[in-house]
Image 1 (spheres, helix red, strand yellow):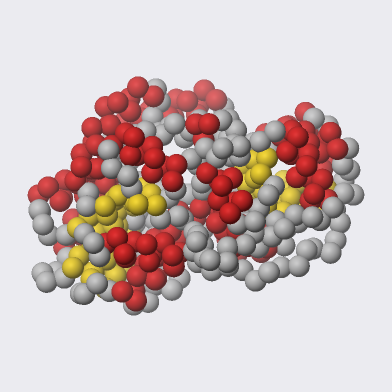
Image 2: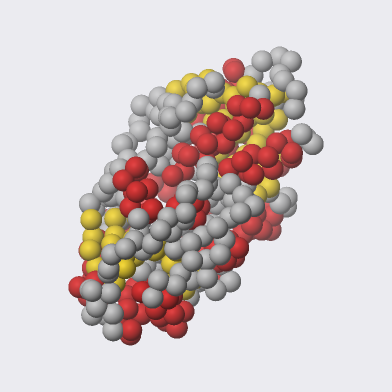
Length: 401
């Protein structure tokens, strides 16, 4: 495209410890070869941001986020519910609305006459979309707007991921999202399942840009030590992400600590240990404190197998986190608890992963294959899930607008 200018509005952009920030940081790095790149964010530039303009709009009301894979200590159920209700009633669409208004205004000021300008807003946070919709209405024809979804906004159906409590409050927010869909020149999202849900609820099918990976790791040899280690670095969400099915399988197979070890870096070690002890395999589980992103990557690359957790209900079949593609790129075997008909299973099986788990039978088979070192490493020889492929797909679509 001639004289292209890509302006990306993302709350987090340079924070290396946040998986969500890497989506557009790594795509921005690739877009540099196709035009001018500007970024408006709350946290500032990260690694390899040369050759692009990064404008920091500070959020004075921001709260610090927790360490990598640490999370906050689990609060009581009532306390968590009250927090969700208070947040749902007070913030529309979210607590960053003031920041989004300033950030979108700054982004609009970066657009220059004569440029082929595309403004990309990515959510969550979703107030960047509502504020951009308003700006486009006030400035028709100045830019073309790409609205990117890393999560669903008002039509989330996965258990534990709905944004508002009580859920009926979402009905008041739905018209805001509807206006955004009607205004945007292009809508993008991270998976086919999310695209289908958005098409069903808002009429137009988004362009799928998988979260992907920057580059595949080198093939790694299997660790030469025993026991085999299954490692999970991420969050535990009651009702959505639980390793209990694997613990039950280890119990059924009678595996001992000389054969298998589960290691967790997560936000709720007490729940993990309780689930393991409940089926008699507490001696197979170790929980660790938070680590840096670089350490987390190293642990994943050295694992006997990396674990992905998803819910086993149809309502979660569209959930595919960015972590999935990091683990594909790590080139170590993967165990994934996910629905039999899930998009996650389809993606993993297209990458040579045959150890998806949705029942006790499949869990036992996967663990047996692992301790016998028969699980293959993921592979993506065509680069279908690479950031480069996502950017090429985006550019081809933008050229037609």
